[in-house]
Length: 331
Image (tube, rainbow, N blue to C red):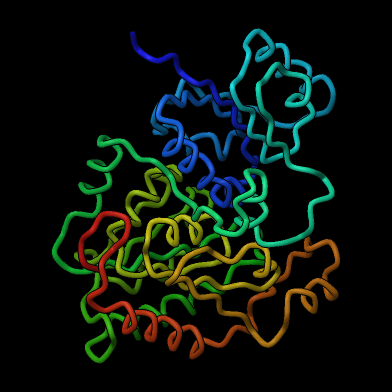
């Protein structure tokens, strides 16, 4: 007789960055519970990240919205008894559902890096599970088709929604020219632009710089999971402090992320080959100038171009010939 599935209900953060930071918990549970059958509750932006999870019984798109929203979600889930409820959010509904075990984020947890904070839920903070997303053969095949070619790829994420956390696009273009020029560390490399359709203008100087034969423009063509699969084929990621930087690091891609009005102590990409570049100001100093982090002003102007070029060049050299942990090929 076949073993019965072990139902696991996972509440994952609505913000993609935080959902990626907590994603390693699902991998760990999948490895340790062969019969795991997952149901994932997540916000509309982070829910697609989990669509290829093995043993997935379904995902539920949910946006926090007060008592009425929580009651509706509870009503949707209350008819089952769960083997484990893993709540990386601290959602009120998770305390009132039937379950054998619960691991619920406490509102009083100390402020620390998101990967460590998530690991505490399963008492794994001594060895935090690295972020990991599952991808199906279909997702991998589509990514391979989009990135097909012989020369290495430098991926760029120049968007970021709010102008405060976007490094000027002209500077990205200059860095790319230095990296891919004849005397650069990646001469002739292709350039892959990853961004939402709304951020198209942020990468326009890059499009003007890179010849069409070396440009892979995926603006508005991928969701986050497909972007993750594409980043497995990249030699380097260069971008702002957004979910893309976390996806790149999780994919095993050497990652240079630029931070200004984002706290790198809590949100730096997690990985052996992930580097953060800041200007002369700490996050706290940036926040003092813009307490609500909402002013329509770029807080990234003080990041020197030379510092980004040096960081990217050093990372390319340090990882030259290394094995890509995501799929086993050379970087």
